[in-house]
Amino acid sequence: MSTNSVTRRKFLTVTSGLVVCTPWPHAVSGAGNGNQKRFAIAAAASGTPATDAESWWNIAQGITSDLTETGRFVLVDTELSPDVTDLNRPPDFEKWRGTRTEWLVLGRVTKPDRRFKVECRVWNVANGQQMLGQQYVGSQDDLHRIPHLLAQAMIEELDGERDHSPQ
Image (cartoon, rainbow, N blue to C red; front, side):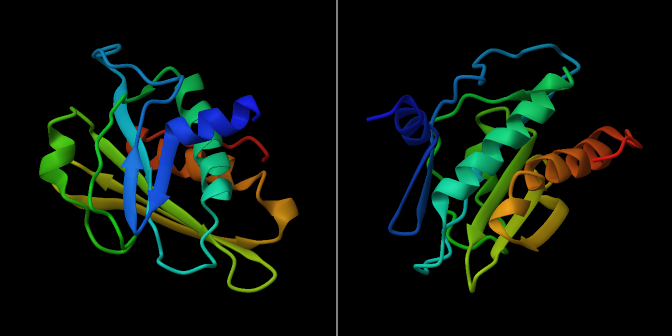
């Protein structure tokens, strides 16, 4: 068994339409820098065989890397298991508020045909409002750019910074 498989299993397990978030190597359980925005990432199960949890894990790992590298975001270490089965419905924010998470990133990857469909929602845990909704459709070759596009959209929306560098 490869180290990647163990790491993926630590991150998330999607079974029977439930989402289970567990610690990542980049996660912190403390408060972090007082100016950092605290976020958590979970996967939403679509309930279809077209769901690709491994691809979402890879995208989530890229988002986390991009956000934490800015120094303005910190991943929250949580073992919370919210009942999230539908990406388009709000999660149970009361459960997330207890983890001191400010922003909840939910996503999934499906493959309805030969292309991949990546969907991502960012929720403000304090007020229960969706702050960002993104959807990308592309080939396997496009999947490597999507985490960077999602992270940049999050930075722009949540931190007010615009990046004008070429992607």
